[in-house]
Image (cartoon, rainbow, N blue to C red; front, side):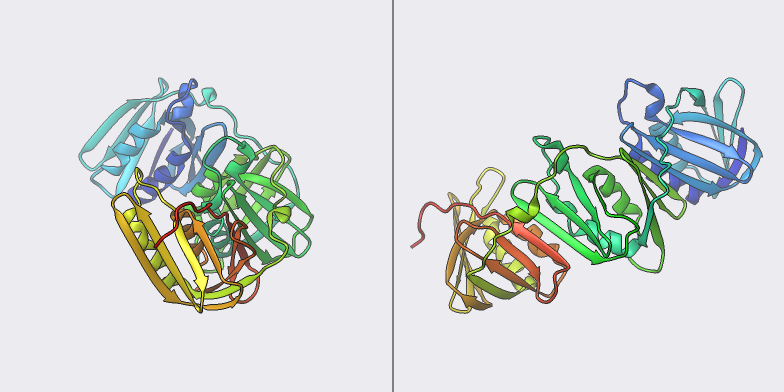
Length: 370
């Protein structure tokens, strides 16, 4: 194998693909990047048996071939090469030579035959959507994906495809995030994509322009194709929460609030909260204003700001991080908050429309404030 390519293109490709490589594996080849050279392109692949990522680079290929090299070592080398052009050659004993400027490296590779095959998806049903749309939807729901493996199905995001609607749902037992867009889908289906896959996809998606991404959906795997990149991921199995039943059926209080004011106020009173000193934020919704209180062994804090409130007065407690996540991910200037009781979930929605819905469970309050 022998080829040459631009250094900056190779560095970008290796940096992205490297994130799908196993850091430690019983299969040595999975700790490496599979490199294939053919015709006028090279293909780089990283795979950890759950997530696989491939990309194609235009290059000058003098001799076809394939090899697996240590992802960490190869990545460290190409990032530090001095010249804008990189030449790579592999001999019959799987020894790779990397040339750039005055730098010359020789590193041992692994035969490509030892690299596991990535899953293939033959399902003809594919859904194509704008990258900016999917990026926005993932960004507004991934914060509510469960971090613990108590319920593995909830470590992913539910994708619901309907005839005229595309919906993403995440839940972790303390909060819920729903985001939807109008979109025609060829068939109705739903599946759960691991949060780790979506985190990597988020880094590749563009949030402007007209570029699209195509999802190829099979029973156990999904393939995302965007630009020169392809991501294949296993799907999570199990029964996802019936989130419709978790939503309050009635509301007693409705609030229109400025998001930035609410976030700033919560951040101020949260200054007394640390990893060691935890305390809920007490919120009072009354008399066209929201009053916040926080008390820990190191002090007490209060704050207030105006809001448009209709309905019953309410006093509730919230985990400050969960409350901030819901507000920050609204990506709006103003939101509508619906309450149905001191121990019922808070709903955060757009001031107009229903493009997203965030649910935050309250915390039971104990001691009263003076």
